[in-house]
Length: 127
Ligand code: FAD
Image 1: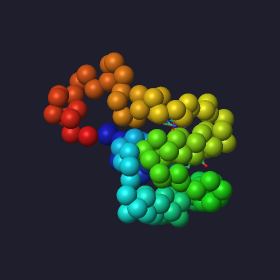
Image 2: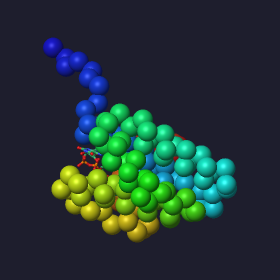
Image 3: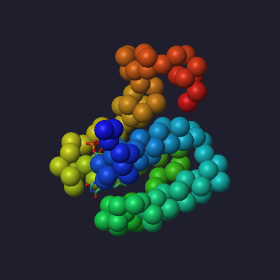
Image 4: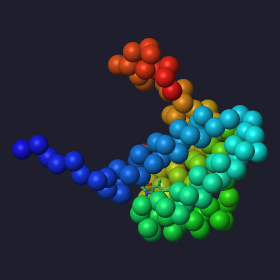
């Protein structure tokens, strides 16, 4: 029988959430307006309040309070999300990721040779 569709577990939810967070950071404005900064600050506050793994959210609230989001530019925000992810990586014994913009863009925005080969041009351009 086909396996049932199950709710995401902590790992799956974590991967999807980091996908969204790093992608949002990769496409955050180079020169955000005051409104952009306030909206992203609110998004992060909401995430830290409602992230549906309670002990993960508790740790995130403490981390965000200790080092508030840097929202002045795309490079700043992408670096901040990367550092937050590295804090979690360290607590789980996973390797740290390099947080410079070129490395982050290669993973989360521009891709490298071999990415999206199966996609047609329209799908590639849609992001
Ligand atoms: P993930 O850690 O999900 O990473 C996915 C991909 O992101 C990697 O393959 C890599 O290409 C890239 N990447 C890795 N590090 C970085 C970085 N620093 N910057 C940019 N890209 C990077 N799980 C727990 O068990 N306990 C927790 O307390 C916990 N807290 C979490 C808090 C938050 C806010 C989130 C979003 C997730 C949390 N998780 C937690 C889930 C955990 O971080 C992982 O997502 C999960 O364990 C799956 O790990 P993974 O090895 O597949 O890769």
